[in-house]
Length: 126
Image 1: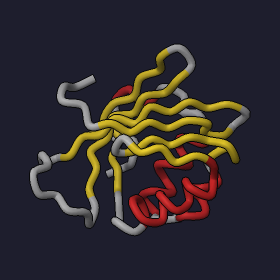
Image 2: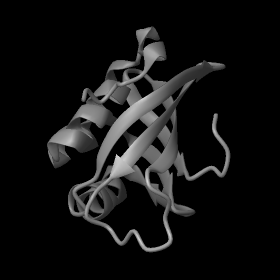
Image 3: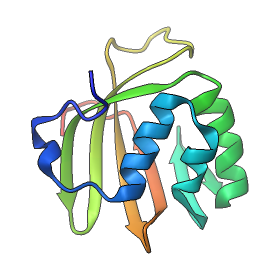
C-alpha cells in the first residue's frame, strides 16, 4: 500500500508534505525534521512544539519512537493549506482508540517548508 492511497491524491502535494509522509513511513528522523521551517509549529495531542529543536524531540519520541506509519486516505486543499486524513498505526498504546485510528493532519507550507502542522483525531470524517 502506498502512503497516498487516496483517489484524490492527484492533488499536487507540496514537496515538504510528501517528504513528511515518506519520512514518517521510513522512520527517517532527519528527513522528517528537514521538512519543517526553523520556526515551525506542531500541535499534536493539544501540545505545542515550537521550532525545529522541539519538533525533533517530538518526532523522535512520538513519530519515530512509536514506529508511526500513515496511509493517506483523503486529501483536500483549503485556502492554501493541505489537509490529509490518514489511517495511522504504530507501537503506541491503542487502548480505547478506534481501529483504524484516523487522524487529520492540517499542513501550512511557506517557502517550501512546513510552517505549521496541527494533528487532530476528529470524531467525524472530512
